[in-house]
Image (cartoon, one colour):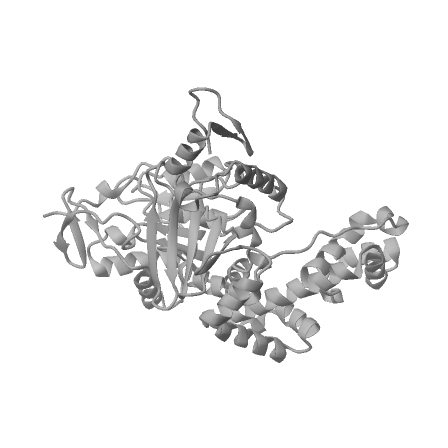
Length: 485
């Protein structure tokens, strides 16, 4: 039976997952050129054009007249899984890699993520009734195959989606992006020199807040150094002014958070086999905040070992200033990940580096019983008082297994309650969430937690009490009007 590959080309209403992921991660950014290898009907190319990106695409059936052209970023999205000849499959990957000057994005269908197509065995995949071929990979298998063909270790961006970087610095930047950052809010006391030269001093304050130290002269541009010299007498004088208008307690917190970030980054670098000793900024921060690079690397290595111990994860979950505890796990909003204890952050980071995370994840479950991290996508966390669970992916760190779940029926989807418990106290809407939870508690809605786990059950409880939720307020429901989330 002849394979008809062109039938796999989809008409999409939004960006494909690999392109959406690359946009969210900043891999595709302003000024980068994009080539879509095997673009199908060209939906991603057209949408990128609409947003102002320089993008072209080739497809052997739908756009054969377009030349295969080099670009900063090349997307090979869901192409390798429809090629039935293993040698041609390898050739396509190698050719796409040869066209990319900065990074290659590779995506393939994975076992468990999508409903397996019906068909008969054909080679190493399936031949469907529509005469299309589908090769389903495991997430780990796809990553291993990419590494085998290209001789370069890929970086997991999302389940079934990988980045392959040309430059070590881009790989380092991607690793850094997997380390969440948190800084306390700074309060600036009135000061005539600071107020008069705020625009010149602010970049120095930003640097010091980011790194927990003053910069070396070569870490500032010559123009900025000159501006500071003219305005206040130089960098050292500007740093003293900054210290005069801020509290010592603020800098103590900044240093603590920067130390934790460094430890997490160094631990993940060791886990991933990335040499962070080549990064001058990381080296300077480590020397300043730990006394020496070796001390920092030693602490990071011990942290990496510790995160594999369930008892250590449990103790740290109990001590965490953020997150909701259950009998087996701690649940936390993605905005609060940077405030978890470092050992839990390394545990999360290892899962992200192995399997990536899907776009839209807003709640993370870190188990202290099993070596697994679950990434949950709830529907518009801020907008809905009780957002519904749309999908999740669970990363089993030990065996690189990724399990997916989708919740299609709106009535049986799990819903979130007490949202304030998942976010940090300084989250912008924390007080609003907490006020609603207190009101719901007063109405007895939390008396039987097992009766309000799904959207349908929650609606029934509201209806039985004659209540309605509007925005993040609860009140009496008008007759014959259903409640909302």
